[in-house]
Length: 89
Image (tube, rainbow, N blue to C red; front, side, top):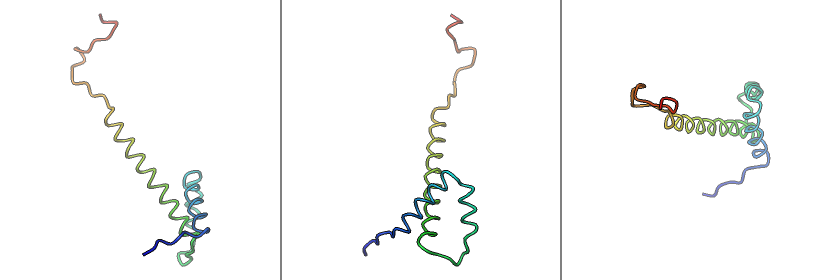
């Protein structure tokens, strides 16, 4: 089964959905909320998918940041009394 080429309307909608989700998330939510459920065309479908793509990427980035934060967290295993600083010497 061959994959269909996306239409120009779909591409335009996806890109606008992605950018609106990134730059104007409140406006994007208002636009999506104002769309009647029975209206489905390439542009509106792509607008939603562009937003979903941005949200997915942000979730992945946040998960990676949390993972790195956990790895970099300093948990000294020695008592504070055993820690020496340069001015203690």
